[in-house]
Amino acid sequence: MMEREKIRKATAGDVSRIAEILVFVKRLNYRAIFQNDAYSFGVLQVLPVAREYEAPELLDCLWVYDDGFVKGMIHIEGNEIKELYVDSFFQGQGIGAELMAFAKGHGAAFLWVIEQNKKAIRFYERHGFHKTDVRQYEEGTTVGLVRMERRD
Image 1: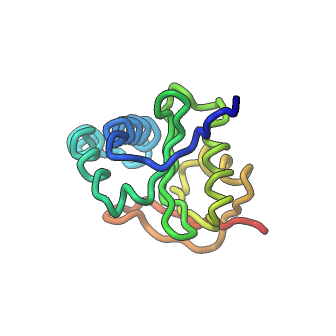
Image 2: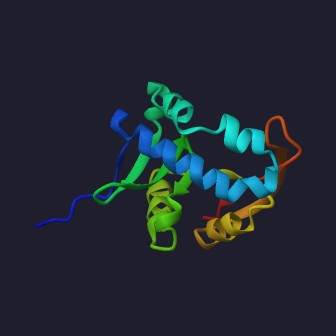
């Protein structure tokens, strides 16, 4: 019997789980960087995030890692990886690597990452991306982003 694919197109039924992953991983990884509890615990709430992600134009760009239940997600638009998150409980199990391989197989060539997020930068470097000299700020903040591009 053939094993079913673990990465599949996200559906409307996935949005609450996607939102849960996004909210908790963003709080864990970004609170120390942005130092904005009003955003982390006021604005960043599961229900509003779920409502945002159920929009058909956004949902159409989302893929989930599902081996019985959703453990991670990736948001790809064109050749850009917009987001990649794995539930904190399941990090270190190869899920992010599988999502990256999927993205590269679908033509992903670049992404933006917070310069202070060293863990994410190391992860992307292990998967064939390198930092460029292109920088910008996260909208509405003084937090720097660096563009990473895939090596061919």
